[in-house]
Amino acid sequence: MDAADTYECDVLVVGTGAGGLSAAVTARALGLHVLLVEKDAFYGGTTARSGGWLWIPCSPPARREGVADSPEAARTYLQHEAGNHFDADRVDAFLRHGPEMVEFFERETAVRFVLGPTFADYHPDAPGGTPGGRSICAAPFDARELGAEKDRLRPPLREITFLGMMIGTGKELVHFFNATRSVRSAAVVAGLLARHSRDVALHGRAMRLTNGNALVGRLAKSAFDGGIPLWTSAPARELVVEDGAVRGALVEREGRTVRVRARRGVVLAAGGFPQDVARRGAMFRHAPTGAEHWSPAPPGNTGDGLRLGEAVGASVEDRFPNAAAWVPISLVPWPDGSTGTFPHFVDRAKPGVIAVTADGARFVNEADSYHDFIQAMVSATEGREHAAWLVCDHAALRRYGLGFAKPFPLPLGPHLRSGYLLRGRTPAELAAAAGIDPAALERTVEAFNEPARRGEDPAFGRGSTAYNRSLGDPLVAPNPCVAPLERGPFYAVKVVPGDLGTFAGLRGDAHARVLDGAGRPIPGLYAAGNDLASVMGGNYPGGGITLGPAMAFGWIAAHHLAGRAPGAAAQDEPAAAAA
Image 1 (cartoon, one colour):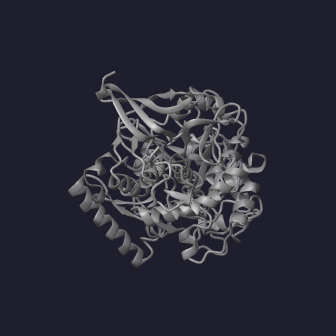
Image 2: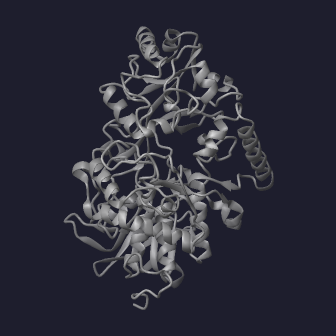
Image 3: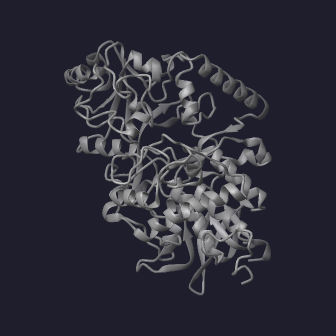
C-alpha cells in the first residue's frame, strides 16, 4: 500500500451523530488531530432525524432557570428505572460529567441549548423523578452558517416535517396546534411558513434548523470551525490492531481502501443496529425474523460499529429487558410507492384519542411514554400480529390531527384515499374497515365516554402524571388528556412496533472504553452513542436519554484519549499531546 492510501491522525471517529461529533469536537479542542468518517452520503445519523433532546440532570440551562434538582435525586431515579441493570460507575460518570459537557459546548463551540422546563421525566412520580427541567435541546440554527457543508447535512425525517419545514417541539408546536384559534399563533405560523418558502426558493431546502437537525448543524459547525476533516460515503470496514491495541481502521473512500492510522485510538459511534434485520430478529422478541419491526433510523444504521467491535473481542450487551427505545410507528404510503415511518409522540395523549387492539379493547394509558406504549402493546397482542389502532372522533382529528393526517384546515382526502387513515360513520363501521371487532369497539368507546365526560379515566388513569398532562391540551378541563369520542365520523390509524435507536450496544466502562468478553478494556477502542450499551439499563426514563449519554460519553472518551481528566480546561495543552 503506497503513501497515498494511508492517513495519519490521533483519533479516528466512526459515525457522525451526536456521540461521534461530540467526541470529535472535544478531542480537537484538547489538541488532538481528529478524522471523522461516515458511511452514508450525509452526516448526522439518526440524530439529524430526531427530536434533538438530551436528558442531562442539573445542566447549566436548568441552573440558569432555577430548576430545583440534584445529582442524588437523578441517581435515585436512574437506580429505580434501571433496576438490576443499574451500572453505578457509568451512571455516576454520566451524572457528574454530563453538566460539564454541556458547559464545555456552550463555552467553546457553536452549540447552544435551551431548557424544556415542563418536559417531565416519563415516570415523574417514581423515586427521584421530576415534573420537568432535565431535558434540553439545541437552539434553532441557521444552516447558512455551514456554507457548502449544509448540502451534506442529513435532512430531517420527511414524515415529521410540514411541507419540508421542521417544527420545533415545545412552544412552536403549540402555535401550530392553535393556529386556527389564536391570532398570535396564526401570526407565528404564517411567519415561519413565509420564511420556509423563501428558503426553499433560494436554497432548495429549509435553512432554519430545529430539533435534531439543529443539534447536528451546531455540532458540525463546531467541527468544521476546528478544521476536522469529515469523509462521507466512507465506511469503516475493519479495525487495525497493532501490538494488542486498536490503532486505526481500513476505510473505503472513493473506490480505494485507506489505512487510517489513529495513534491514540478509535471511537465507534455508528448508530447501533436499528436497520440490521438479523440482529433485530435475535434481540427483539416481537420481531422473530427481524422484519416485524420498523425504524425511522437512516437505512445505513446496520450495526457496523457493533460488528467492528466484536471482530476484535468486544461483546454486545444482551441482558437488558429492552434492546431498543420503542416507539409506535404508522406506515405512510407515498405517491411514488415508497413507505415512510411516522413516530407517534404526542397525538396519543390528546383528548378524544384512544388506542385499541384488534379485539377492540384498550390496553394502556395512551398518554404514557412511547416506550411504555409499545411494551404494553406487545404484551396485549402476544401470539398474533403486534399492532394497535389509534381511534378518535371527528372533533379530535380536526383539532389535533392523527399521526401523519394533519388537523384543520389541511385536507383528509389524500390520507383516506391512500388507506393511511380509516373512517366510519360509527365506531362499528370504523372497526369493520380496520379489522377490529365491531361490537367490542362499540363497547369500549361507550365505556370510555361515560367517565370521560367528567375528565376521568378509571381504567388506565390518563392525565394522572405531569408527563401525561404536558402532552395533553391545556385548554381542556378538568383533564387535558381526556375527552369522550362522540362526534362522528370516527377515524383510525394503525400503529406497529418501531424504535428511536437501540440500547444493546457494546459493553463499556465509565471512560467509554469498550470491554472484551472478560470485562477488560480493549486498548485504543472507545464507543459512544448507540454503539455503547445504554447507561439507562434498557429502560426509557425521560426525553433525551439517548442523545444525553451519547454526547456525555463522547466527551468523556475524548478526554481519556487525550490523557486528560474530564473537566480539565480545554485551552490547557493536554499532558499526553506530545506522546
